[in-house]
Structure formats: structure tokens, C-alpha cells
Length: 128
Image (spheres, rainbow, N blue to C red):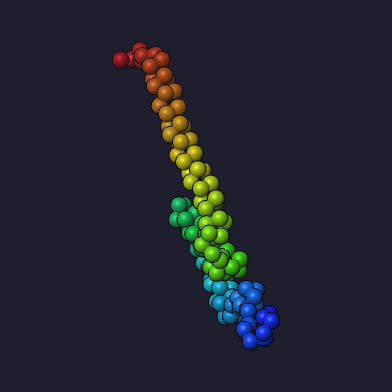
């Protein structure tokens, strides 16, 4: 701690003021362990299909969120810093989702176009 010239008023530095209890970190470690166990349980119980991918991605996002929030101290940061770090990936994921939807639509339209050409060009069956 720094003392002013008169010695009576104390100024606390920001680095010295922030002390998080170790219990928070232990609880997060336990929660990360539980989420990892649930993720492994998805494979152990052989969950298949969309439910498998949904659960794996859900546990992955929850673990990543906890690590970012607690171990990278994002919970205790200013809101501007949180936006500065989280907003670009969110925007990027939004653009990827829009591109994916457009790609699906383009693939569907190509299928319709080429299928229509195949049907129109197919010779008539001689047995009818």
C-alpha cells in the first residue's frame, strides 16, 4: 500500500485490492470435472445422432465459458472489456451461421435445377 505525504490516508492499489477466495476456484474445478465426466458419459452410454452432438457441444461451451469467466477473470472485468473480448467471436459465429444457411439454400436450389433438367430430358418410356 502507498501512503500519502501526511501518512494518514491510505491509497490501495488496484492489484492489491483484488483477492478472490480459493474456494471459488476449487468449486469451478469440481464443476469442470463434473462436466467432463458428463461429456465422457455421452460416449460411454453410446448416445447417437443429433443428441450426441448437442450434448458434446453443450458441455464444451459450458466448460469454455467457466474457464473464460473465472480463470481468465472475465467475471470481475469491466463490461467494456467483456464486450471487447466476447463480441468479435459472437459476430464471427453469426456470419458463419448466415453463410451456412446460404450454402444450404444454394445446394437445395442446384438440386432443384439439375433435377428439373434430368426430368425434362429423360426419354419417355416405350412401355406406356
